[in-house]
Amino acid sequence: MAQDIDYGNLMHEAMRGLIRTVLRDVAENGLPGAHHFFITFDTGHPDAELADWLSDRFPGEMTVVMQHWFDNLEVSEDGFAVTLNFGNQPEPLYIPFDAIKTFVDPSVEFGLRFETSDEDDEDIAVEDSGPVAELIEAPEEPVKSDADIVSLDSFRK
Image (cartoon, rainbow, N blue to C red; front, side, top):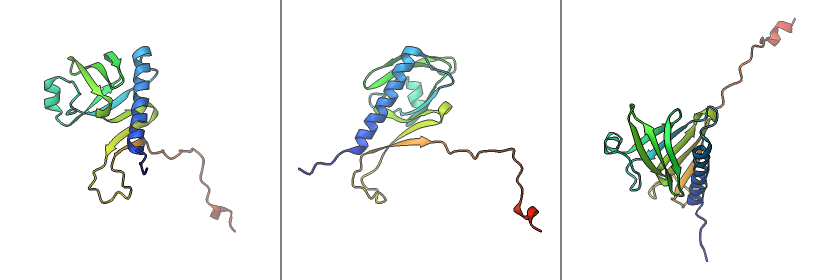
């Protein structure tokens, strides 16, 4: 009975659940305050739906922004549909949650990155070669102060 706990997939499912919850709230109440999202997804995912001209222009991945104008946001268990404006041309998209590569809300310096590691990667010490979810954190900026800096040498005699 030596079964392993699949932490990678459990983490991915939890992070997708977080995105699902956030988007459901936005669908019901709109974006609060300065919140907005940069969502990068795999345009080649078999369940992703986007206009042919968009998939031709972005054959591997694409980043969309949900900020000032979006319409028809509908969130399901497996993904979300939204209409976004591309050069004054509204286009409907369907993005499965498991196609998302990054989800970032720069207004609060929050982000998630979903990665998969290859089984042949020799740098990974852990045998689990499943997905990896990573919280993206913006580096903290040094605290700026208007205080005068006084050298201790000025007090020496």
